[in-house]
Picture 1: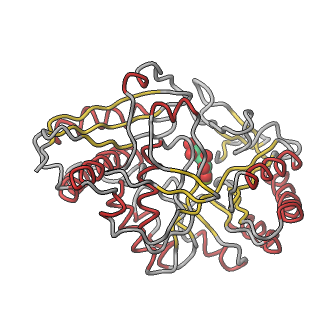
Picture 2: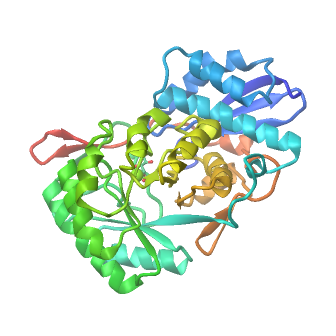
Length: 403
Ligand SMILES: O=C(O)[C@@H](O)[C@@H](O)[C@H](O)[C@H](O)CO
Ligand SMILES: [Mg+2]
């Protein structure tokens, strides 16, 4: 059995910060796990280096479940984004090792392929409606069958999801949090025209998605869901903050627009009521922030019992190591829905060479043993970590709001 002989946290910043855990074994086989938590990277790096790695040395790398339970129950202070991202990195690296030892891609260890490829959605955005539609047309030309639309809001200087650099969106943009200004009324007036135009230009064979990014009250979200029904969105995401899962009952009562939530969830408990009461249609929790492949499989199985499908988060602040793991997970599970795909920059891809591919709107993890992703440590060392915070949001009267 492969014994864990060492584990190191690698911080690198090829255009944005990434935290990677590398677990080494006495058989010369190593595994990788993404531990990136945008804006809080050093918290996870320290949690791993100072509180997890010492407990791993000497353990049997094949005992994934036992190590998962040791790190979850043994922490005493359970759950939370930092703890569950650290556990996720260990879990993912151990699945990578298990696949390499078995000579099989991880999806084969998860029950094999349930589909030929993984449907992904792209990000289309623009400062204006016209720019957003042009961006969506570019996504369609690249072969995407599902496109997320995020447009600037007339009267607001900036808003979530609209990037300065056309094709790459990195929200963590400053050494201290940038303050954005928000107006729900201006926003609510701006979304329907974008969908109306998108259907006129792109037609009905493409899925259209939208991320509300936690910014509406339940009744405002119900209003938006109803307004968008004629344009058949694939989903609206994070329609309202989800700490109070019962909030979604109010939205559900008023609209048939599918609801997605969960990219900031880190355990099944964050979604239990949402899933049990079928208040949502897609769960967005992902490998890096929700305890790794082992926990995410549990969450997906629970979701399957209640007609909820997966729609894993896949922004560029999740590294190629997470994308690789997510694609193995997506390929195998029965209630897969869709996978977010924001292509990383060439710099990032050079640091993290990988086997996964994109073709005509679908992705595949590849068939290399393990996850099929690596890290070029020499190149990674050239990119120094640089503190970067996510923005904050205030209302026009200065009230602190959800970003
Ligand atoms: O759906 C999404 O991809 C977004 O919500 C993300 O861009 C999110 O804002 C970032 O991952 C935060 O770091
Ligand atoms: Mg989102």
